Length: 425
Ligand SMILES: Cc1cc2nc3c(=O)[nH]c(=O)nc-3n(C[C@H](O)[C@H](O)[C@H](O)COP(=O)(O)OP(=O)(O)OC[C@H]3O[C@@H](n4cnc5c(N)ncnc54)[C@H](O)[C@@H]3O)c2cc1C
Image (cartoon, rainbow, N blue to C red; front, side, top):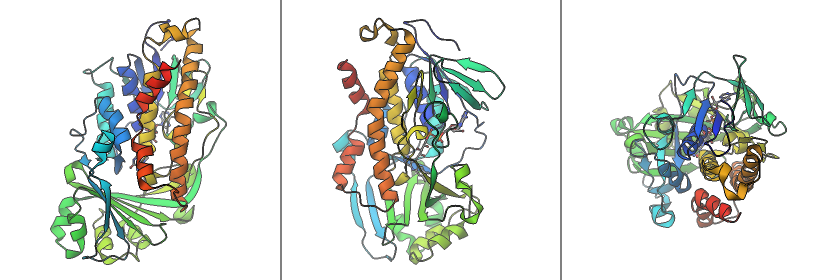
């Protein structure tokens, strides 16, 4: 790709086709640009468990033409809290959920990550839809970046230039060092088991001990130990046919031969290891863990990642986990990346170079000005949520009421706030 003349759509390079790279590609395609995505993997075997999409995320995704019905997502209607020692018959505390749509004008969905990824990939690359189809280059690892000229270097020795380079290569980003001083995420001492279980197994067992799961078909269940350091999260996805089960627990970094510092991601684990970490939870929770498929339990050491000095340089910027990875406690990691995506697309309309407010500047100044605005809009917001998530992960008090946290997370309209900011310049 070459730089485009003033007044024409931008040639956009995106590095990484995870949830955030694809959402950014889709948003920029719809804004009228030519988008090419470079992804090192070939996506031959997509794995993963489910993610929650709060109203701030679904507002963006639906606005981009994504369809949660097609993803077979389950609408979240309530959160049920249980204690680790509770036995059947005990009542749990039930809170929030059913009123979220009324409060925030968008729903809260529970969706399998693979289904969300497929939907974003299909919408971004489809020949149907607003804008020109994005081009996805699989098996294309990007090795270097010259942020000033907007040039990336590929593994095959070739170089490609664009008007803007968006780096969405995840928490262990190898391109981050070309934008901001090198930062290595460090082990947090927490890890999460992740698996999915067919709901039919829960029904087939017909064990009275699993009644709490059968009663919670559209609920997000949180089972906490007394000091909040261990937690099971259980919720449905795929039309209610599949249950997502995650088990957060303290874990000595490096234990069991896992080398957290070398990478973030799921390591192969087993139902036995999962059970061992939750062995003092009451029988009904262990019954559920026993249903985990032997070949589909992964262990994710969680890495700690603090605010970066900057997200932008020249014609390049960081988005998603590469910019602001966070603990999963608030279910906002991907959601914050979707906010990055819509903010960028709102700041970069296809008419950008000819807009009056940017008149008199050359194209590279214009892009850098918009990227600075992007950083000023996004960095403080994502950092606030990252800091709050990390506090919860460290077992520190939240210091906010649940309703305040909800308002802060879900009431945020990233596109509207960006339009307002543009109105002021
Ligand atoms: C246990 C757990 C639970 C979570 N739950 C939630 C939740 O409920 N809700 C939520 O919003 N978020 C949740 N998250 C966070 C969410 O999964 C991440 O924030 C999100 O997936 C990050 O997406 P990304 O696209 O930024 O990065 P990634 O998904 O890491 O994608 C990066 C992509 O870049 C590619 N890549 C890397 N290097 C290169 C290179 N050099 N060249 C080319 N390609 C490259 C990779 O192959 C990958 O495809 C959770 C995370 C965990 C660990």
